[in-house]
Length: 343
Image (tube, rainbow, N blue to C red; front, side):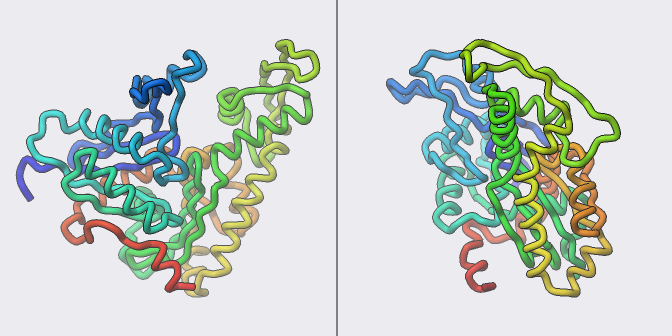
């Protein structure tokens, strides 16, 4: 490897992108958002600068989320966003970096190719793909090369990844589009149905972070929330309790628990025994809802551990995997083909 060469790892999320630079740690944490002028297609802001403009712009300036559920939904915007982010951390380098990108287990071959092409267009010399579940396990301190099963649950913004890893690979996995954004949507629907009050996604997220829970709290918490009354059309405020939050989040959490049971059912008995002994690793921004680890432990009978830095765990794990780049295969990893062969 050249002395001046830089290797970087990217955790490309629906709402947040993290970039880890080898030997320097996480150097960039930005919103996966682009503000675009719809009249001429010109990009105005990228990242946190674009997020600050949300809800405060004329009609011709629209926010674009180029990444949905860990895969590209707008190729051009993704390439330009990645180019901006990579440029910020490699501005003084004469060499194009090698890039490791975390991908969900549900990614298709077409989506893999689009991601690789976008990264190369953004300035990467070589692109390597890594399943996000493996990166999360490494970030949590697991030695994935041992013949020892570990279950990893990564609840992000757009996707929940559930996987059992052993011997450096994913044995069984399930990827569902029920995660942090689904929690927010459930809160919006609940407040609308119970109080005839319309609140925004940002207000719902604030509620989730302040008093949100999926397991009974020792003490009931309350929060006043403001929105638009659907009867009068005027501003109105109501008081929401943590018990209301548990009721609102019941449906999306039930879907996650169902997926966990499904993965455990498909896992070989020997590895289920390992998982029962090692516990379940819980990561991702959506995993920070109060009591989620306790609920999963109660429903599965397996100790569930919430990692210390749930938001950055996958990025740190991908960063540690950079030392293995020379042993990894460049380009597509054909996850869809592997799933077909396992069926």
